[in-house]
Amino acid sequence: MRAPRPPNRPPRCLATAAVDLRRALERAERRRALGGFALALPLVAFLFVFFLLPIVGMLAKSVDNHELASVMPKSAELLRTWRGVGPPPEEIVAVFARELKEAYLRREVAVVAQRLNREQAGWRNLILGTARRLPDTAEGGWLATLVRLDPAWGEPAIWAGLRRAAQPWTDIFLLAAVDLARDERDAIRPVPPEQAIYLDILARTFWISALVTLLCLVLGYPLAYLLASLPERWANPLLIVVLLPFWTSLLVRIAAWIVLLQREGVINDFLVRIGVLEEPVALVFNRTGVLVAMTHVLLPFMVLPLYSVMRGIPLSLTRAALSLGATPWVAFRRVYLPLSMPGVAAGSLLVFILALGYYITPALVGGAADQMISYFVAFFTLHTANWGMAAALASLLLVVTLLLYWLYARLVGIERLRLG
Image (cartoon, rainbow, N blue to C red; front, side):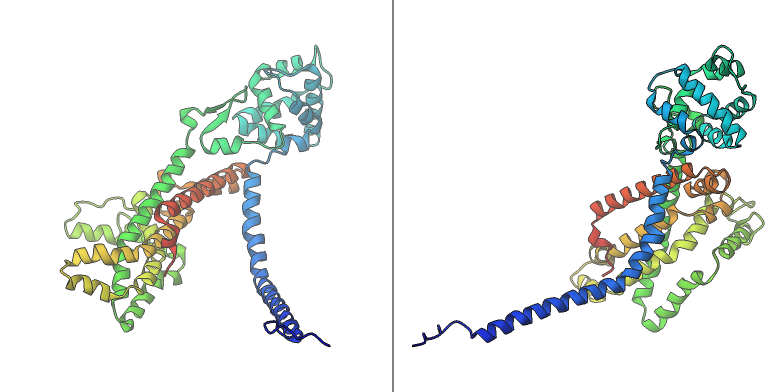
């Protein structure tokens, strides 16, 4: 006789149907996830090719050191194994002299000369002059022959520089970006004061960016508050006015500021007419022109995040504070300002990061003492072809910016960067 089915156990067909339904749901979830990944794949590929790869290439270029090894491979291999101080052994000098002469005949010695000149100014002429006058045979040894051609070959510094140039990677550019260098014993030391410029340039870059951010916040906060408080029929036209600079070329805007701020310009003439100034003053090709032009260009990037946050703040909260006895200033400081801080944080961070990389505006309306670090990156890239130094300065700016962003997020709170 067949045993009765337990009363709480579901029929077998229902259990099988439940398992099949669960598997079908899992397959549907996987298909949806794969579909979403397929839709996002072009964007991921675009970011990888045009964003991540250039950054990785820039970081690699700042430590690349292939010049000597590509032109004089045997000398580079021997110099890498040599760890002495002063002139190397005669067999290493002999290989170096032979390959130096061969590189000169192949017209490739300029690559080595340029690389050595980054270690010490003047070594380029030393390499080129020695390669041009180097004999086919040595008299009294190759080291003595080199010293007769130029006494600098008897100094430890040139051989220490060659040993560093023979390594596959170098920190010469990264150290130079923070005003440091290595001596003949490979010890890190500060460069002479007359050569220490890059830390001052970096400090100037952050100082100008901070001032521009502060000016944009002072000007943009009241404007965003006005836009958020007005009815939409008035706020929308005013918002279009704020966005008008986006419709004008950056060069046109900068040229307009040059015309307005020059000594014979409209602003100087107006200030003299109303008695504020006795005579025209220099408002362009200095720090004043840089701050004015950059603030004008970056002001919309401060207003838009502030406006998007302020539009979501109910005005009834401020009215409630006033009805409870708070003064307008107290209601603003205790109620409205804390609620608008996400917009302040997002706008300030956006403007500051954009200002760090500005090049055209300081180059056109600033003086020699107002150029930011992006100017020197462009200078080393376009004028001297020193891509290692350009990449080192760009890498330094990237690292410092990421560090400041991390500190900003830790102190202010990353949740304040969310716009709503």
